[in-house]
Length: 464
Image 1 (cartoon, rainbow, N blue to C red):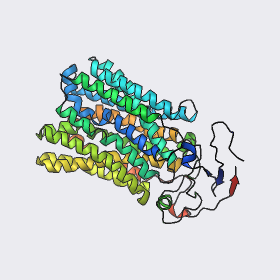
Image 2: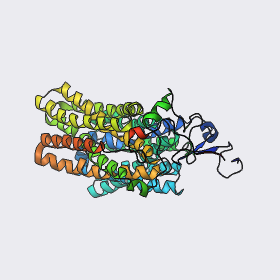
Image 3: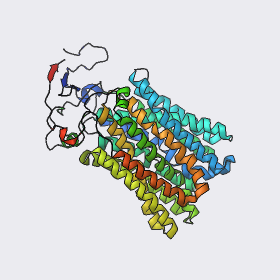
Image 4: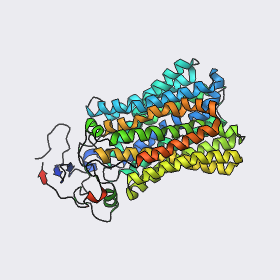
């Protein structure tokens, strides 16, 4: 049946192909026929938008001294503002995903709303002295805005690249870290009580403009869409897509959120991201202060955070690519172990007062502290399918809202009680526990690797 004349449908005919497990794939429509241009734009535009919003989280630690002095806040006040931001940035992912899948909120509209809320957040951080007001403005409103943008961008790239989502998701996710690099140095060297209003206001406007321009071109593919040039039923071969699908086969069915929870795998993912993201947020929040505490000076402190941000972002892209070769689970465990070891290394470097060693472990901490995010973003549709991914990934990513509490706010309490060495040692131990939990993950419907047939046979090929 031709799709011509059907409201909102592509003018190109498509087929629905069903595999041996009942999974349906919509094939025949190219990215050009749906978008009018290459789907690569659905990688680059989300990447640019993610770089724009990265300043809110990854540069915040470099701005907190000036913010404290300008507004009369304590160190604990500034960290709790970031913790609330993280809570709402992660918490909006699930309801936003539900609204998107119900057709109430389009991807473009979600981006527009997010951009406006980010602007409000920076204006609040700039002009409100009252801590509670700043928490509401930047923490709540700004966090919701960044979360809308983040979740929309991640889901967008996953839907358009179902056959090779590791590398693409990692690339887009990386922008959320190294996009903050210029602002880290601005906040360390050109940000003071005399100009903080102007700087923060301009950053808010910058985020608004960049995200709004990217959002104009956002569009989701049809449900069950699969690239026309890749056979979803026969992915044996030497191409990049074939190799990735062999290691990370498509989900056995399209799981609804309730079904995904009942598999037991989604709750395990949630627990793993709670622990791992908590360690990552702790490092982002305290690395600059720890560097200053042990006497490394502002250059090393800023450089360590800059190194962390760059490697955090680049590491996401590298690990996303690596997961297409190694498989998601093995890559995820590797990343979490590296993150844990880096926490102990930071203690060692601080005790030795070695600046170069400190920067090296900041490198490792940045690598591990960001690379696990694209793993979860890619594993969720790998395990549960694309049709409900906005909601399913929203549930998984919501673990970060718990992480924000003990990574930032509670982390500051541990530092006050145990000192930096005790806090970093605890963070390293938590990472190792998370790695053990990640070892229990498996793809629902495919309990053992040997059960995964490289050439699944179709039940039917139905022309639509």
